[in-house]
Length: 160
Image (cartoon, rainbow, N blue to C red; front, top):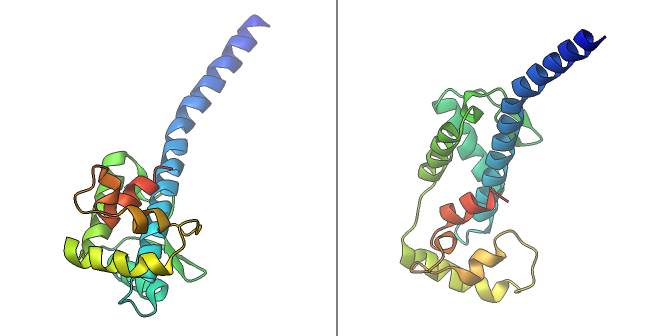
């Protein structure tokens, strides 16, 4: 009887250890999806963007096609599958985030300051929008890195 319990415990340990990476991959996928969600909000709130969310998804799809990434179209969004190689470790995830950041035009600090100043009066401080904190606390020379650029804000957001 004791042998059976020991064997069962060993199988259980092997199962748990084998699935630890799966949890990490799911966590990385969730992190990436939050990053994409934040970037999509940024594009749709951009003062010069027409059809922001649609244009964002089109650009994202074009990037995936160009890089030959497999993706799943789901309700107008293009999602990378969990079994994608990009979620195997943090280094690959960070590379993917950097690709997304580079794909979208990064405007100068002066232009971004101007846009945030234009959006601030239109946005209420207690608004539940994802970008409200960024709109009110953005500063190119901020002491907090997350408020220096939209990409750093979205990257930080993806960890919550």
